[in-house]
Image (tube, rainbow, N blue to C red; front, side, top):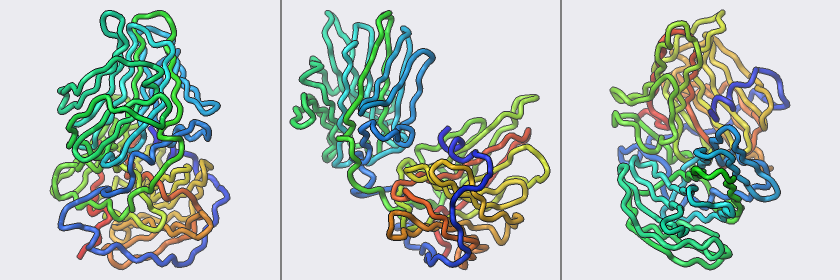
Length: 442
């Protein structure tokens, strides 16, 4: 899991600089609650044009998550991504790590499959953060041995075909999915420059979407290889939505679509009584394995000149002197792998920072005080040189803030993953309760 891998390094020193002085960051005002409605990314930001990859800079794990079965391979080299399957019945799946705005945006991909045969399939799906909506390309061999591409809009598991066409691997080498108004256009091109509309359909339910590519090798014993290159031209375009657009009172008692990437293993997340509840289950008898809950927004946000706050209503049982893990993290992971976070565990509240994948630095570790530390804030300001200064603050009421420390010199906050991460290995059920994400009390 991405967040646990990024956040679970051993505490050790690294070359971060910390200065104990003020970082002038005004608290978010009540205006972040727009017309009393909780919200996520909107407008012409975080569009699908930001999902671009030339497969030359080894940032695959930043943009994509992949599932590869035993014997299959996924290799990034020389500006191409090669996906190879060797066993009949096997799958390779790769998905964008974030959701991107599809309104008035498009996604183009150069997808070459010279070994495509009768029983192989390729599916390219755009899954909306609104549950139940997606659009899909689906390539297969139809009788009698005709290479066919079908397209569809899927609503609550039911596919509504938008049509099909004979697929030419040369003339249709590039696939582009373009959203304009309430319609989606399925287009192909031989060169990535001039596109032909093959089909279109109404797709008003698609807002922010995750890209999923799945390959399946059928019963053929011959290898199935796909070469992927030139995703959206290779260079990201546009900007992430500002973090001030992400806010939630958790009063709806239903987790909103803006948190579509959230996941749980041995636990759950929910809204109840106007609050966010993260919980882990009692493990099976004799098993103290890791259980985790990751609560994170569907889109990436620009934190480079902003802040993120959370109201901590109930924390995990603070037990010291044990190897059992009861941990909550409030974290920001940048596009280049830098991390800044709060962590509450073992009766302490700590600040951690990681610079480009190095081990943790821990600039402060304080005894946990559930009253004085009820609110947490991470604030970032760009420094004019491509880097940023970041710091940690706490508050008892969400209005008057005490800055603990600042000046963690980190980079990449223009594309940031934000998350609350709960991790437990103790043989007990645990619960943490939160409120008011990026909402300042009146």
